[in-house]
Image (cartoon, rainbow, N blue to C red):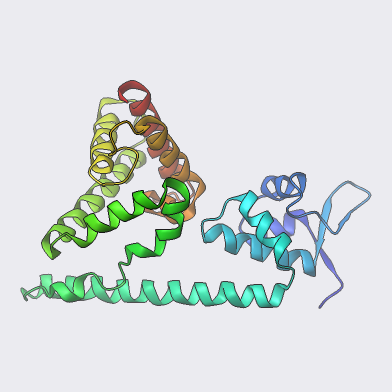
Length: 259
């Protein structure tokens, strides 16, 4: 590997992150710089870049910073670990390719007036991919209840559910792009529909009697901002996390007033 190193500004630009984020990673011991220049600037060598790549990959997989620190502490074989990450990324690439083909097939059928093939419409939409994450966050019963509910749906019911999710995402993005107040009546109406959608999913704290729906809804809003997998559902044309932040703020306002 090269013996050169890169400044914090260079690494932030190359990695698509910020100097502030890299300084935070240093503060919590996750990514210390390889050296600090006389002017106080942090610099990073090749091994540090490999470590940062692993951190970003693990973030993409939905792990929080404490969990990432544990993974990196346990496993010091960078090449082997990256091979595991690569396999997971390829699985995700395959799943997305199947989803794209599925949606393209549906569009072709709709435009051509052809009959929809239900068995082809949901290829790649595998809800079980989040099993471990759901069980870690809300327990095995929550996953089992929601899994039973999903598998018990007809193809038409699943299509209706997907459409409901799509409509919510569209309305959230449209409201965020118009720059309305998250506490406005319009935004709060979308928040109400969002919460009603959540309460319709068995196993979630919003649907379980006695569950802490308020904390759950507020926590989800925060996750939409922190987790790029979910934040992408609310991405506006301006990019960044603006759309997810709008959803978070509107949901928090609704939850604090109504739950």
